[in-house]
Image (cartoon, rainbow, N blue to C red; front, side):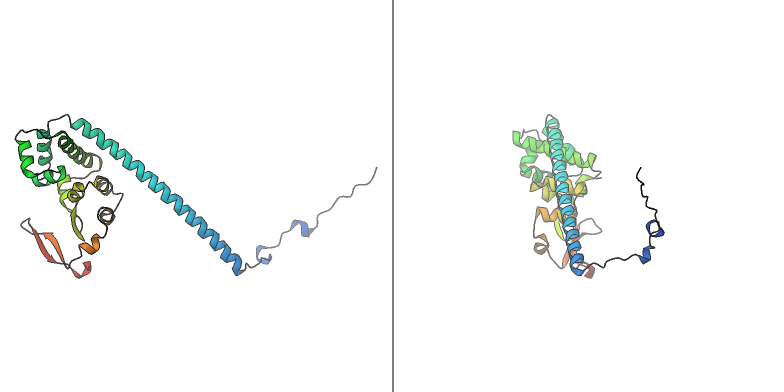
Length: 222
């Protein structure tokens, strides 16, 4: 039988060099630049993916809100318009603001309150306003919806959520109430260029008697 040779491991085979004694190759500037470029590409890809996901989530949120609003409106529309108008007023909305949001004149609103029937389209608008106010109050923890909607959205402009509602910006108000956008983002969406349009050295504030008044802006606001 032929002899078989066995390799006997030596110390060099079994003992690794200490880490500090191992030879490492210094990467070149070109290699570092390539690695940085690859990391930048990966970061950009992740940001794009995140942006797409955020956009998709926003679309789903908006679709859910539309369905909720349509469902509530259809249910509430069965009730008498005069009754709905009274409830909206009892929640703190003035008749002039209600007329603006429904899209009619104050005299026409007065006739409906006295018993005259609105058109089918106006009846739906009344129901939609009542449903919208209910959603803000019940689902988004907006205490005193009327006062909140009358308040200027930002100190930099006199626009309110009532103004946005009259413009049909219901989704913007919804996003603001659910804290998915900031006040400035709401204004950017509703009225681009509002910063330049409403820039002033003065600001509107509520005086001690509860009435609006004007005063110079503080230097910290300029």
